[in-house]
Image (cartoon, rainbow, N blue to C red; front, side):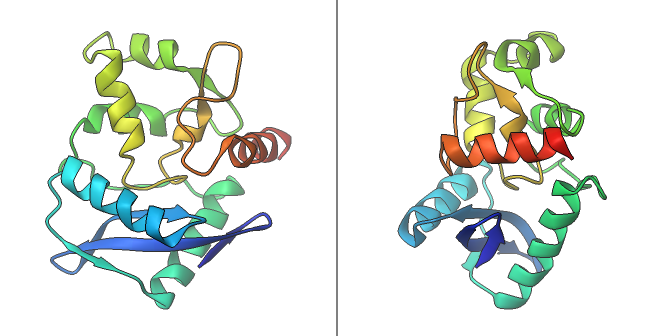
Length: 161
């Protein structure tokens, strides 16, 4: 389990050749498993689904550093489908948001909106690749696997830090 604000979230990992290639969080363990399997299939990550308290501690620390703007997440994204989209999302400044349209335009229209949305829905490192910073034109909603209120808290926290 990983704690963010007052949320206790189940955490799970996809491990391939001794490396974590994806992780996710959810308040429902069955939904977490379903989401991780979907991410693995989307990115063709034929690894093992695991749950591990030591990894939870490691990722808790990583998430805390990212959420406190003390560390940027670094990862070789070459094995992921639509890696350019994830790299662009990692460029969104801490405490700022962009719209889906702005993300689309920043990618020079290389991908259509459906491809962008699919990449976001299959983010292999939720929060660490900060797709919570992508919002609708006049609304913070959009794809929010942990709910709109969680996304709102994340954005407010980052904005006020």
